[in-house]
Length: 587
Image 1 (cartoon, rainbow, N blue to C red):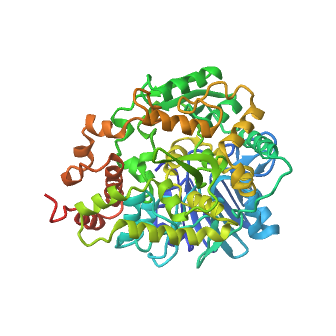
Image 2 (cartoon, rainbow, N blue to C red; image 1 turned 60 degrees about the vertical axis):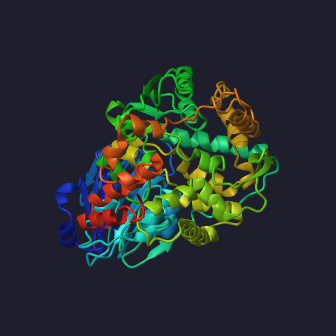
Image 3 (cartoon, rainbow, N blue to C red; image 1 turned 90 degrees about the vertical axis):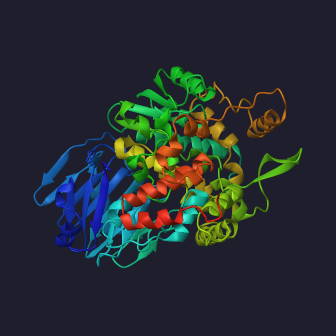
């Protein structure tokens, strides 16, 4: 990886035994911990920052903003025994956080904005903290005899002498595309949970991500407040340096950035130039005077090489890194995207009420009054019980029925996070956000560019936490968009031509069920066709012909597991290979 934070709660000598100093651009050496950071953007506006002085040390890795306005500078400074890199306004963000911690303690983290990990040492104590929604993972292990931690799961796993597979975690990934909670694929390797921090001896929870809905006098106030916060969040991120680009769909989320950041010059969409999604995105780019490039869905779209698999961190699918094969053609320094806007603003994980029409359930545009949490989450994660059973039938005969297994682990995860919510609907959202499968999308971008993550702005997270689920809807979001720019909705997405989500759902259903009516085109290229055209079965799973009849998504998961294990431990690869051997009854 191009960018990394790695540290130990120990001395510089202990650090050097695990990782060579030359690997990192900056190392802070405290009394409690030693931490290194590698990041070509260290010190740039809104990006990674470091500070070390006589009173302590702080490193912030990733996108970050202190609560201030004004111009920015990326100058690194030295002042006596102090070193600092990374300034926002007239302050180094790392220095600002350390100074605020000295007066407020751990509550200082609540004011730090962005998508980041923050390490801080002060007055004989040290910790590393996630942002409120752990949009940046922090992995840790005690196996080397000292607590080591970092952003690259493979690098942290490499400090374990003989890592052993955590089979249940691997099965979670194969069935649902995500490993839940704090687990990883290996025993002895864990990751920080949502809204938490790591100390030399414990993992502690914070209270930055706790649902506390506020009733407003008028429904329209939710949209007005969202619009105001979106405008400020976009302007914060408009400061990121260099040439600016956007991963653009024809949907709603990314166009808010296209409208709000006037310096965006280039837009990119993965898909055939003739596809509805691509033509819609090109029309949007033209509306805001930006160039548009369509990346054809050739083998690069799904081919999961070693670099792409590493971004999955062994816990989530590389499938979501749609753009990874085209990185060399994206000639920009800063990249914007709309990831998770549907989750935070439009209730992706909210259980919808529905009615039966012609034997099928059709959403009716309101939250379900009494949802089943496990059924809802499994549906949102894309779990398919028949495919999972087919997979298990093809491999080890000793594995239990997948449906019982996934229901138990999802229930445990829901129960674990539900204390942060006031209702079943908000607990569903919390669980979904904590285990969002698509996060490698952002991880790959932030490793190659200055990558803005609009949805995790602290003001927008607060809007999500304080807005009741019945108002976290597409309708509220679209009303907010019209407050920002009354021309933003000039062009409707091709699969959502109507003014309300309910009408769009009904039309989509009718088109699918009525002969001679053309259904809406899916927004993403056809994975099954790509597997066939580019012979991805044999290229990705050359020794597993008995798995070729599985859906493309499950074959990609199998390849992800094998590929990631190869980067960590050859014995683990052999163990997984044995698991994937044909069931004796498979002909």
